[in-house]
Length: 284
Image (tube, rainbow, N blue to C red):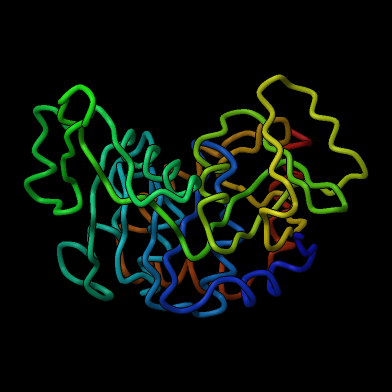
């Protein structure tokens, strides 16, 4: 059963040095508040997993929390490069970073295989692609029934997965609406999971046909963090801050400006500070 607790407690109990950590959320519901708490608690030697690593992983890499990353696309969406990610790969600053690149399809299938407790995922993919030449974890298998050769990748089984969602009830069941991405699979594939939510309610009453309900027994901790997905958006609550993504390019391009931003906006902040973004956008 999920424990409803503070973000500090949830991260302290579930995210450990050396963990394989997945933080998912596709376009919206990206768990920024949880990522900041991981930085504040000084976690190290994390192996990051994410289909589309963007600003939150740029921040974790930039503070030296990550030893490696498995991903399918990495960048500042609509803007350009992740400069802290590039600095780690190109210059080993603040430390070397092991990388394992896949396609979106392979990552999604690998999460699904992990959720099903299977050792690997199969897909019709990588045909004519060169990733297999540089990624030893892209193999092939032959179908015993048809003889078709298929791509195979290891399943993703994180030590801990962290996501953001719209609602949880008081028993710890969680509601996700809008673009679901692989949040469900990431939680079901993980040994432990933390879910931050916009609100905790008495009844979920999912209002949309594409709503996803994650049961309390699949979740380790639920945390009330209004605005916790900023600067990404939370469907039905607040929009994406395009201005922040643009501003991040300049902030992250320079090591000193990045360090100053982390000091002022992460280390000297609290999860409650994210509610300012919710109030501002709600009033806009």
